[in-house]
Image (cartoon, rainbow over the protein chains, first blue to last red):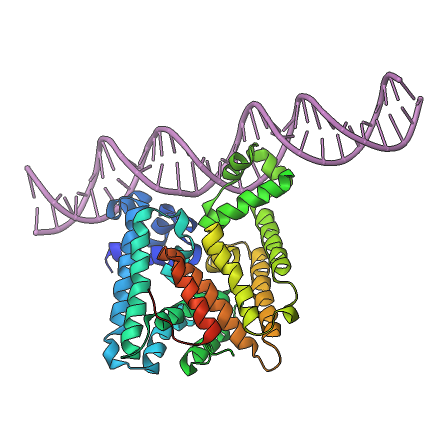
Length: 178
Length: 178
DNA sequence: GACTATCTATCTTCTGATAAATAGCCAAAT
DNA sequence: ATTTGGCTATTTATCAGAAGATAGATAGTC
């Protein structure tokens, strides 16, 4: 594997655990097996590194989701939910944009649009999957519930928390409280 | 105001912007107008400071919410939602437990139960407010949607995002964005 | 010879934390 | 009433380590 990719992999894993200030160039250098100056060679600043992280994260989501028209209705919800379920149960990692979104006010300004683009993409993809007549607001609420559900599930150290929320989102009962 | 409280206020504000690793004892000392050693006098370690932060945050939520029986049904949803709407629009701050929950994997272990207690309390309070027949899973999904909605709303720098999600949670009806 | 990737070495600043000194206060003992 | 001793809160000074970042040297490749 090329070294730039290894650096991004290490940075992503660490950022998804501890956020922007929760990892250092030296941490990454140790993971990859080089010196911290080498990490600076590939990404001159931490800001540049994290921007690249955000871009790659979005591209991966696009690849994983595919064409919304191929996953109409509830199947589309499942497909987006799977991104979060995999993060939770397979990777045991927070969503990169979820943790950066929470820390947003303390991050370099250049990162904000990358995070916004991710949420926008998920929302637009899901709106398209839900088909004609679907409101973007509904799709956005689903993304919010998944992001928050991931936080709650991790805090309670219980994958069932997120799974249950996904079920409610699919059956459409979550928004119907009264 | 007593100095201990001023320290907690500064720490809370900064933690709700940048998370656990996003502020330092010296930051707080400058805010309060003392030296960093004085902050250590009141809270010997950062872990102790953040534990106190979590406890106070829960107590404040309890005071703000009051008795769930006094706010049945949708009124209960509004009351919990108001915690998040105030954070978003009045304070322009993330939820303390939301940001710590996202960073959980990199935080001192003693902090996790404090965060879990906050989410548990909101869920239990809301379950009680929704009355007999209400499932805790629904209440938990509402809390998740609010937490995630706060992140999305802050990322898009648009209070309407969270407001719209709150509306959906209350009515179950599809609401138009923009 | 230029380019790519890495290293060693280093800089400045910041970090959480501690020790020791100082000052103000208050109640008990003289 | 004055002194004593302890308590609270703060200071100065400092530590060892970590942070982001840079300069310059080195080696391999095309």
